[in-house]
Length: 479
Image (cartoon, rainbow, N blue to C red; front, side, top):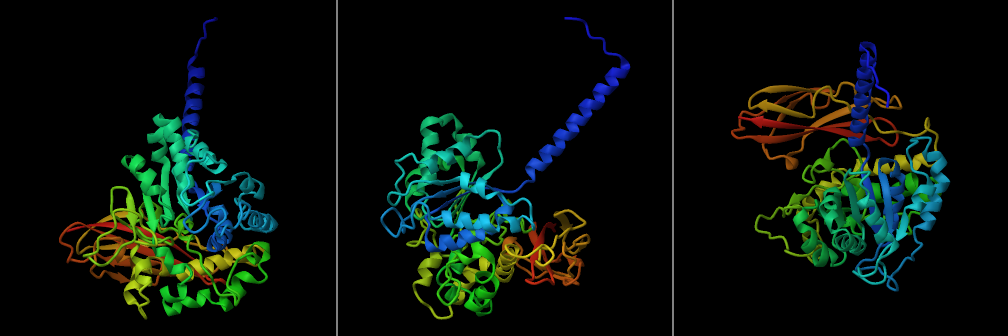
C-alpha cells in the first residue's frame, strides 16, 4: 500500500468535509426526533370502529401509520356480531377514490397501496384468543423488532388487546433478549380492556418494563350515549342536521360510508380518542397523559398506568381490568341520573374540545372534494419565546404569539387561558389582554411553594369551518 501524504491544504478540505458530515447528521437527527407519531391500530370492526376509521383515514397525513390490524373483543369475534375479516376493504377503496384530492391539501397522505400493504387480520377466532400466531401479530412483531427505527410507537387497541398480547408473547418466546428494547419503544392507548389479555399476560410478564399505558373510559363522551354525556350546547355538532351538511352529503366516497343513524345523527366514535391523542395540535399532550388534549386527560394510578381522573377522593381504582364492568364513568352512566353534573365533569377532558374537534373533522371532509383554495386549513401558532419558562411569585411575564399565521390568509383570534387541571396550582391567575396576541401574565403572590402552571394559547381562524390550534406554555413558578 502506498504512503498517503496529507498536505496542509488537503487537511483543510478534510476538516471541511467532516464538519459538513457532522452538520448533516445533526440535521437528520433533529428531523428524526421531530417527525410524526408512529401508530399501529388494532380494531374489532364494531360499527363505531367503522365510524372512527373514516375519521382516522382523513387524518392519515398526521401519522406514520405502520399497521392496521383486525382483532377480536368481548363484543366481536368470529361468528359473533362479526363484520368480516375484510371489513376494512370498502374504506380503503373509498380512501383511494378521494386520495387524489386529499394530496392537494397535504402531499404527505399515505398512498392507498401502502395502507393496504400494512393491513392484516390478527387474532379473531374468539374473545381473548392469543394462542395462534397470526399475520396481524407477526406484523406487530416485525415492526417492534425493527432496530432501524427506535422512535416510540403508539399501539392502539380499539377492541381487544389479544393480538397485541400474542405479538408480545412471540417476542418473549423467540427474542427474550429484545424485551427491554421493544418495551422501550411501546406506548399503549386502550379503549377499555375489551378482553382479559392485558391482565392475564401483558401485565404480569411486561409490567416491570414500565410501558406507558393509557386506558380510557372518557371515550364514552362520544360513544352511543353522547346525548346524555355532552353538554347541551355541544350536542349541536352531533345532530343529523350538522352531520349531513358537514360530513355525510356531498363529501366524497369515504364520508359516504360513515355509518350515522338513519336520521343522520352521529352514532358513536368511542375509539377515536386513541388517535385524537396523537394529532399534533400544539397542546403537547403526548409529552404526558396528564397534560390533556383532544384524546382526554389522565392520571397516573400505577408506575406505568394512566386512567381517567375520578374526583371522589374516597374512590379506589380497581386492581384489575378497567372496562365496562369496572370503569367509573360507565358504571355511573348506568345509574341514569338526570342532568348528571358529576358525570359531565368527569368527561370534560374530552368534550371541552368538541367544537374544535368536529369543525376539524368537517374541514377534512371538505378536503375530499374541494380544491385547496376552496377549503379551510388550520392556523399555525408560533410563540416568540420558549414553551417552558420559570418565574417568581408576584412577577409579571410577557407571552406572545407573534409569528402565528393562517395558510389561507384568514384573520386570527387569540384566547389565553389557565388550564388548571393540568397543573398543580388551583388558584386564579390574572391574564391581561387575554384575547390578544400579546399578553401579560401575573404570577400570584399566593404561591408559597413550587407550582406548575399550564397556560394555553388558543388560536382560531375565521374560515368555514372555523379551525383551532394551540400552544401550551408550562411555567415553573417559585415562591
